[in-house]
Image (cartoon, rainbow, N blue to C red; front, side, top):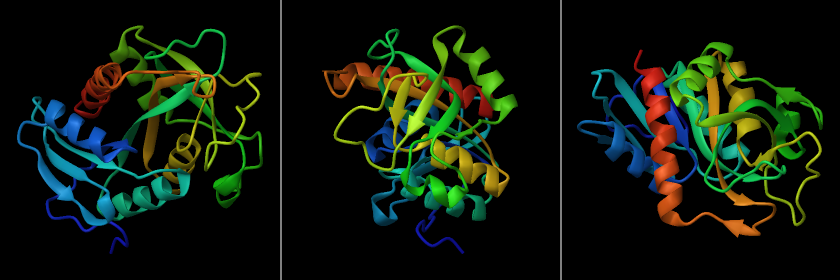
Length: 224
């Protein structure tokens, strides 16, 4: 049985993963016809229901950081989840980065912390599911660019070296690596919520709009 999640409604085989419980509610209202709260234990809000295409979908918050996301994904696997898309936020690091743009995680690079639990050395990369990644790219129709993302357990006091890393976040390595271990197909689309190391932050309204765009694309590929 799951150790953290206490589902009060059926969990679908397909899931969208978000760190922020508020974003889980936002996407549930955006994507599900009659969303039911499927988890509220530990503040990890989750919602399940059917999309406008009639397919079951769960939208689950994973909390903050890689360890929390990995544990939540393990619980979802026990509840029958087999495909998942992370819709998260990141800091843009390269010269092309624009606040509010969407990035497809072409690979996620371990930058320390709990990555060792997945047998990943610092600098080693983990890849998304190839088919989900391709379909997500098609669904976004040029609205997102592929990026190499570096993940920490906790954001450091100073930004990561931007060389060969386009963005940094706290969960993508853990989600992709744990998905691989569990046999779950996982991909990730990230919203650039800030540039550099907090030098410029996206407004709440713009962040919500970007989350809706990413969520609709994730729902589309999980509904077919």
